Amino acid sequence: MKPSSRQKATFHALPNAPSFKVRKNLFQNLTESTVLWRNATGKGYEDFLTPSEMAELSLFFQQRHILAHREGIVDQDYLDKSGDRSYSVGQKLVIRDQAVLRLAEIVEKLGMNLPQSLPTTATGVKNT
Image (cartoon, rainbow, N blue to C red):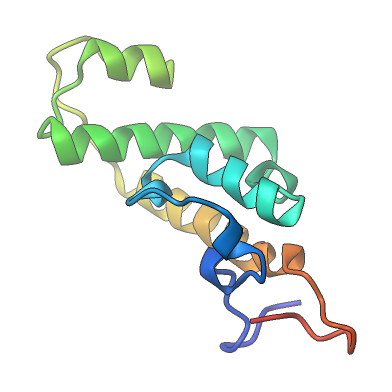
């Protein structure tokens, strides 16, 4: 079931959100954000994505970091964290159209499924 425009899976919409400390730009860290979502709702991103999709999403997050903070130049930290052996230190990261489309598919799937983990009210309506 697709969530309506009124059903937004945002952390701050959760009734227990104020009980969690959320650091700035948490969404940029896949591991921390899934742990926070799991602690708040009982389900993490891995409950909505396959292991393969989680691995792809993790790689895309690492690539975003390289693009944003290293002007696309691969460093050892990227190689260690991503496990991407198609590059060597100092090479320029190349992002292909297919990778962008795949990222969009995974993010859409996650975004469409996150509302399932929102608590329901006594009337059975999802909290928004």
